[in-house]
Image 1 (cartoon, rainbow, N blue to C red):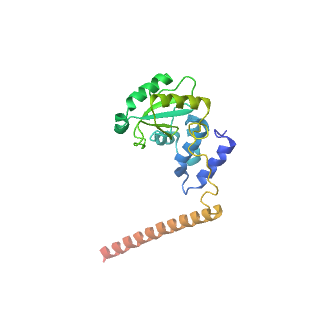
Image 2: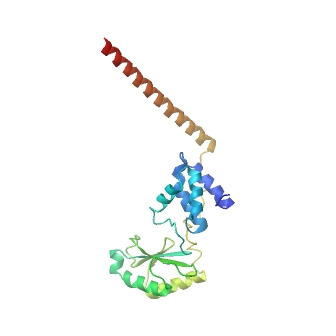
Image 3: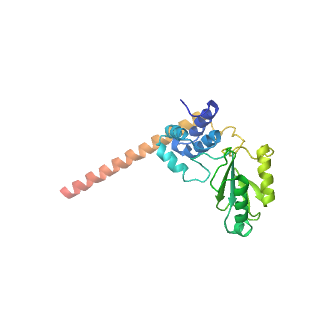
Length: 221
């Protein structure tokens, strides 16, 4: 039984069809599963492994390499506070401590109601607005303690749902047409490519055998 909903299963099949090799869809499928569940569940990783022809361990190993993929549950809102040098000089340490007090969790923790996960992040590339904060990978600007409190209140009340979707949703715009090339044409070109590769391999093998035979005759002479 599929871990994906019918809609997500259809999107997963479409993603796999976009690549010459199914395993190339591994990371996009991880993002798809995370969009559905908010994190990468073990069951989702097993299904992804089946879809792309690898082991669940390979899926987990790949996912654990990327900060944006989570193999443990996180809150509806992932709040990231940058503490690299520019933000540190701009008050990031004080803001992070305030955030911990406001949310009642240490960095790396999730609130009891499952609403917020707080993390101490590396550079978030918004150095002109310090200390930089993102929520679900959306920039919310350099924040003071008071602005952070307002952000939390707004998120709890749903006042920023239009701009900040639940964790796992990278984009809300769906591609319309994929590669914009008929799928039968893609399949035909892939078959031709495979045939050409096989022909080159056979030609190389034949050439090597012929060269070996010539060498043997030369030695015999």
